Length: 384
Image (tube, rainbow, N blue to C red):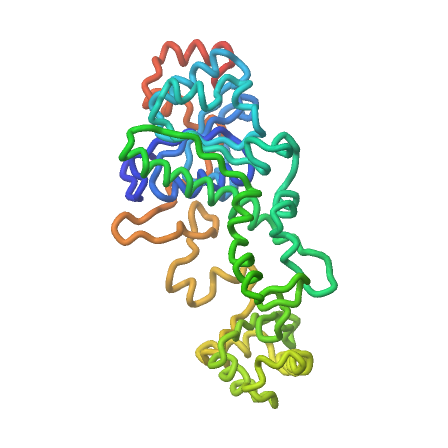
């Protein structure tokens, strides 16, 4: 898997300490970009024989896996030996866990001063909430992101785990690792990347602070430009129980919307808030007269900023995605293609998700571990 990689991170060696959510997401991105990502799995998760079809965990794609007992001094010593050859280590434990294992950043950077040590947590490595347990919904609640998502008079709506785990956590971790690698090319030194989901989700909402200061965002949820407070930035149900998304904010696109739909509303009154309720009702009634796909056919090229609301299972078949190959089938599983796209060093899916411990022998041999030492570690149960 480490041969023939074409992405911008080809040649970069990453150790990923097995975890959940944002850590694996970051590992997937780094692998898609060409890095050789080796996941350190728990020995107890290694099945005898390592047989059967590949797992279907998309976030685990493009890795190799070794099974190591991180609670054993010999297992920790093995990982530290691998750290000496790694460019990056990423982990997603709560603060202090890696230090207690003997794999904290000080220890690892002492062994390899060029190492980029990436950490992702919910509340960060310090602060009064750092040791607390939580999930995506809690982190984005504390950062202010969750409050902003929802309709007037209704409860905040958790946006799955897109904002906290993946956008604010995994994506910021991957970005931080790439930035630290770029800086290392000048300084020759590694460093710690502390990616906290409360920090990342606060940054994702940075535009709101500017809009509020400019008087363009109010104190109430669901009454603003982008939170369904306006009728021209909304979703509407169609006759078949599906939905369309309208984002006709600019006057020319709004005028196109009104004209194409044959509304009675005067486009020049777009900014008249007192007329918005009647406009919302007229839009709702109009969209109810046709199916979602009929509206899509009518509005696709109308420059009215309207799109069909597709399910994740429908999206891969949309003509635009087909033309751009936004989705691909890898190892029999439909999934998103690597993004963004690189003109000279394209990313790629390096392979299916690994079974825990599937590549232990190959990886340890490739990373220079003595075969006799591997045999002893296997006999003791510290490697599988």
